[in-house]
Image (cartoon, rainbow, N blue to C red; front, side, top):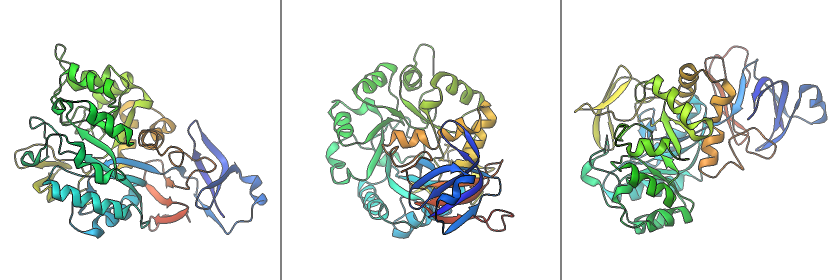
Length: 386
């Protein structure tokens, strides 16, 4: 067994000081440091006064470090998983794009294979964003490959798909939603032109999630509330890209006031340029230019983000004034609950997986542990021997 000492441990309710985490692949104990002599330890890892949090979970990320979920390369997903460790992410849903369906199917097969490998952040499955979306609000998705929803297209991949984003106005029968839910797939409204009434009917049918709220959706109007109005008027969980570009800080504050802490999940929606910077890239087969931190198609349409999840937490704290314990819930407890892994992940509790991130006051990541293994350590990090 090992122990992390000299850290400020973030639990679901508070920050523990002068406590240690004892762990192997799972958390064995969270105890006062004075009681560590009860355990036979192979290693003590000094957090040097930094915060120790549950590992972050990103349920919507397309790529980073030059790699993309849709790349026809078995190593791309593993390279993404290693790269995401630097941002505190210990688990994620590799997120697909609207492309020719044979390419989507091959991507789902690659994700299935990658789910069994532990080279970095754990790949929990796929967030299938499209192709069952609205042409009017396709955003950076390729309209040429949009399809009407058919559950038969998902049946070979029920073990892989964890969230599916769709436009509910395309569904004639609610059986599609019900079939997804019966197989443990979270159904999300996104890239949709649904009216308020259509959105609320789909929520009544079982939709529980909204993909990147405010983005690729009609704006809220007092006579036509649309999907945004339905999201505010129901118990659905809303994804938020908190890069201060996709959604203005004032709207982030309003979202928090309306939805509360338990109904928001911070995501990145990051594309391959994330952690690389400005330049020319691609997303879903379409050319993307990143300039001044903004990713756009040639026609100016926003094309994902270059946000990292640790920066999203910091931005949301700065924008709303919430405390660190509350902000961490939005990338740990909330996503874990939403995709059904809260029994294993999302908080530092005895019996849960030993997925941790060590970070400083600015949310800069010093170390990342997955299943108890130290998989990332920031070079030249003075004082921290994690």
